[in-house]
Length: 162
Image (cartoon, rainbow, N blue to C red; front, side, top):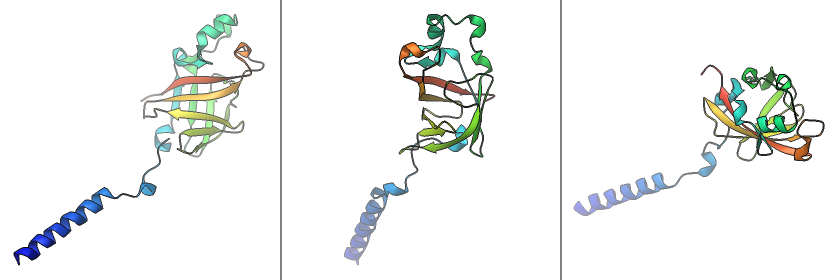
């Protein structure tokens, strides 16, 4: 009887070990953008915006853009709706339409495709209060042509009224 209890205990411990140590990676939640965190209104601080690695305020200075012609980034709003639509308010963004659709994309669900222009944004550090964004724009016909034909825009977005 003593030997049976030892064998049963050993079998249970072994079964527990295999149950805990063996997980199916295919069942793991995908890494990436959480729709619940993204769907809200976002703004941006001008000091966090770079184009081609250069702060946007420096680029305005280099391009001799008068103060009165520069966007008021404090008024900028980017609204992601739960129905897959978005709206840009108060500041025009190069390469991005003022409204359209969005969807999560990318191998790791870490990209956001903005239509109708099919701009792909890489999203990182998404939380309920902020996220970082990088995307490539065509600089032709903009104040930023000196950076080349395309440039990467980077910014830190902050949630409004959090």
